[in-house]
Amino acid sequence: MRNTRIWTRLLGVENTVIERVAVEEGESGDGGEGDVVIVICARPSRGRRQRCGICDRRCAKYDAGEGRRRWRALDIGTLKAVIEADAPRVTCPGHGVTVAAVPWARHGAGHTNAFDETVAWLATACSKSAVTQLMRCGWRTVGNICERVWADVESGVDLFAGLRRIGIDEISYKKRHKYLTVVVDHDSGRLVWAAAGRDKDTLHTFFDALGDDRAAKITHVSADGAEWIDSVVAARCPNAVRCMDPFHVVKWATDALDVVRRDVWDAERGGRGRTTKGSKSLKRARFALRKNPEDLTVVQQAQLAFIAMAHPLLHRAYLLKEGLRMALKQGHDTAETLRDWVIWARRCRIPAFVALQRSIVRHWDAIIAAAEHNLSNGLIESTNTKIRLITRIAFGFKSPDALIALAMLSLGGHRPELPGRQLATT
Image 1: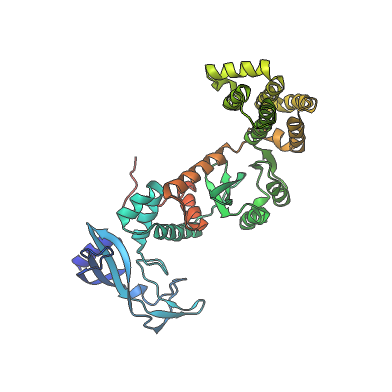
Image 2: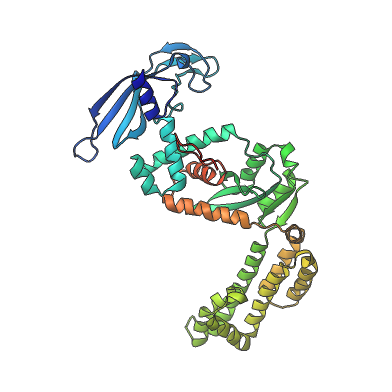
């Protein structure tokens, strides 16, 4: 009995009877000497036998299944360890014939619960190479484990509890224009939902999960100017104040300024594709035109002074961009200041900025609401940056589900805990 307790503590399992422990030589994958594997033969305790692997209901035995099988357990010292046990099948009234549950592993998993929790914690804290080398498993296996662990967490918590102010955005997670739609909670700073895709159907999926009653309690929604977000929010959150992120408005102005710069640059080359001294100076000045005045270096200040004298049209476009940036920082006076800017842009005779003021007028209510309620997409942009970092550290993911699971575990406020550790009390 004493040995059984020791082994269950070592393996991090409960409701398990250890029958015997053996050591055998494992197969080597590189042609060298095989690994030594500790094989722990076990069985569920009397109260945990013949239960459905899906619903954990006590059921009648169906047959012996495919015989004995093994589950990878946490290493014991430097040696691999596996749990070996029978895997009979049972007849469940709700799920039919299924493999019986075991207390040390999730249904359908090839690893113990302690192994899964350890891998999930490491995935949120370490790089891909560190996790795979320490746990001696492949990165796809790590992704599958994160999905299993997150599925358990998701089933046990209410992700949408107290949701009032949300931010919606999309992020590219892979080349060839593959995107995730992400939703964050402005009040708690948590990532509350993510799914592959960036269209109306994807966002409707979020509101379907949220429910009409909770959607009606949403007070503020921040996002960029995407039409597919506007239409869905208007239909599903009729009581919410739509806030247009000021960062994206300034980005529109920066893009318009870049259009003007390229036109002036092309005119400086004479339209013949040849390089001149003037075109070279304009190319070097593009960073000075994009940066905020307070961040300019001495050289960049000199470049702007030269542009003001040599290219008045481009300088006027730069002033329009800076004027819009300052107008959006006026708080409750933003509406009046922005109205003056729209009149200026409407008369500037620069096509890119004339088109820009039309876009601002079209999104006027959302832009003013963001200024009045002091709400932006800064939090969700920070979340997107962290998701990109997760993707970069992992060198990509086989499927978006693995990325979403790891992002939710890392940024959703439900980080896994290492098995056997107790939180320090202060």
